[in-house]
Length: 476
Image (cartoon, rainbow, N blue to C red; front, side):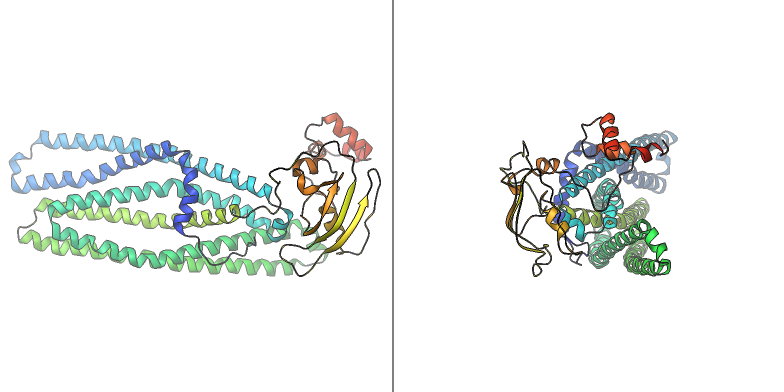
């Protein structure tokens, strides 16, 4: 899969279907998190009702507004605030733990899947892009997995409960207010799609930037040797400008989204203020109801504003989830057959039988055609030829770094496709053209070829390779 992603978006339902299995493992934690969210919502919903009750008594029967009654309401609200604080503490702590666990699980699955992909995949894919998907993308998914269920659940509860309470106060004013909500949602969908596309493009540009920085820094000696610093700066500037362009598109969509919500907020307040005042004058609304309406609209709009705030996070999470799925959907080019056997008692006879090969993205150009050769066990054979003639590719077919597109390769008479990759590759010693050293000590790098070997084995191998003298001079 090339990292040059198309503009086509994966359906949201399909993304959630892929994401739900990660939630199931922590469904108990999520259920209690949403329960705590509902408890914090109760506190906000009850406050307008308390103010309504006090206002109605103060205007209709001031004598009934006793100190003891007011104190009882105060104690009730204090109790609700304690519950709110406890619920909020759980949401901020355990809720974040859930998100972190989901992020960890997804990163483990993604890394494990990347280990299964063949050389062909990595030939077409920039490591910087993969790094972005393993780190920043999954962090966005973790935040999305925790905050978005809470915020959307809280908003849903507030909207439903507020509607039920307000309908009982005045049906027509409630309907006038709530009829604006679906209109607002329809208008917001356009900006929502634009935001998601902009976030995806921005993620891809950031991945390209990571790949560009990685190339430039790892090859800094080559850059300086040819005095090409200015050229690298020019290429960096192109990527940097690309990120700026996508961010501008992103912020334009966000600005449109925010403008629509603020416009409808104003319309709701004006509607309640004007129509509510006329109903109050006509005696169809009490003073307490009028105040409660204004407070409930404030609560409702606060929920909408919070959703707007989290829409950006929601879109970032969806984008990260889509990019996660794109990699997880890549099928490994090379897999063990269901009946693959372990390669044991290896003698080392290698045979190429009418072997042909072309890279998966270049069917027209055969790298190897009709190669037939046998290397008896115990013999040393040199493969020579000009650069690009296919020497490395030929050798890469033996451990199945690539699969032949015609003919077959055998080891001790067994087709390499009929044995497990692990047993095949553990039977082959490889000296890379470009040596790569992992972070860590020299001993750890030597032992990488045999994880069961001891430190003494590593020292003995270094001596046989004539590397012990310079290794002993290294610090630590």
